[in-house]
Amino acid sequence: MSIAVLGAGAFGTALAVSLAENGPVTLWARDEMHAQQMQVSHSNARRLPGVNLPKNVSITADLNDAFGADTLLLAMPMQRMGGFLNAHAKALSGKTLVSCSKGIDIATGQGSTGLIHAHCPGARAAVLTGPSFAADIARGLPTALTLACADHSESLQATLSTPNLRLYRTTDTIGAELGGALKNVYAIAAGTVIGAGLGDSARAALMTRGFAEMLRIATTLGARAETLSGLSGFGDLVLTCTSTQSRNFKLGHALGANEPFDPAITVEGVATAKAVSKLAQSRDIEMPIATMVTALTEQKISVPEAVEALLARPLKEE
Image (tube, rainbow, N blue to C red; front, side, top):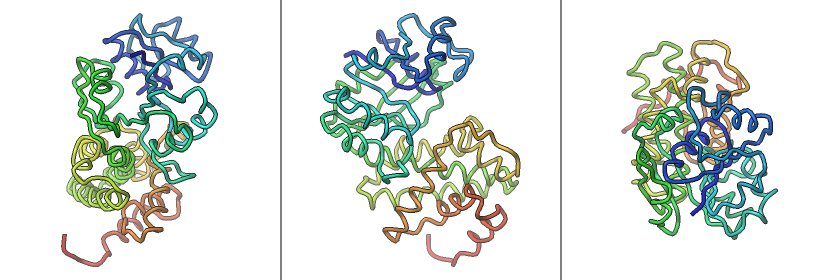
């Protein structure tokens, strides 16, 4: 089964490096100059410095080279995925499309599998998600992820597993994609807590209540609770809320410390917070932390005001 990774960001590049352990991989970069730089240097200094690309990773800026593969890993920002799928629906028909993006499409409120089904009904949709940083994967450090596919495919699991990538499969695509998307919202909140100097006890409380919000919205939308308790939910939440490698955590930390943050850095949790807050409101689901993250990132409320509002909520049973 031939493999292509669409997206030469840090995570897409790391996946290509790891999957090259099993055989040839095509890595597509949107920017032709970026692709040429990688071809010459055999590295992705722009997105994943210090990592050499194996010889059997073929780098290209020509989508036709990537579309020749049977299995395509979509490692692109979530807010670009719908447009990409729509533009290339004919070429993607009949392919296995594995989303590696974590977020909710702000225009439609759909996750990645919903977008795949909507734009490419002839394709097979899957999700690869879980607690992972690109640098760890690229360095060959042990990482466990969730592979979600409706047909419970053992063959896809075997194809995408490598010596350092251990994949656990599930048929709960909704739970897997929501876990990966929602944890980014609470990572922003956790970063804000630490940046504001509120302490680790406050972070632990926020993570716990945030996880309760994740369960509340995900199960309402059809996910299984046990999926959220696994790698793609709780596991990813723990990693992202406790590490400065997380872009979402870094943004939150900057908000809490009242420091500048590079606007060129993609932070999926910002759009996800807005999308999930809208979803929660339409279904009358209480998600106070996600709502506060939306207000913070839209500069509608200050950090002290957000803390005061959350602490002033009525006392209740856990």
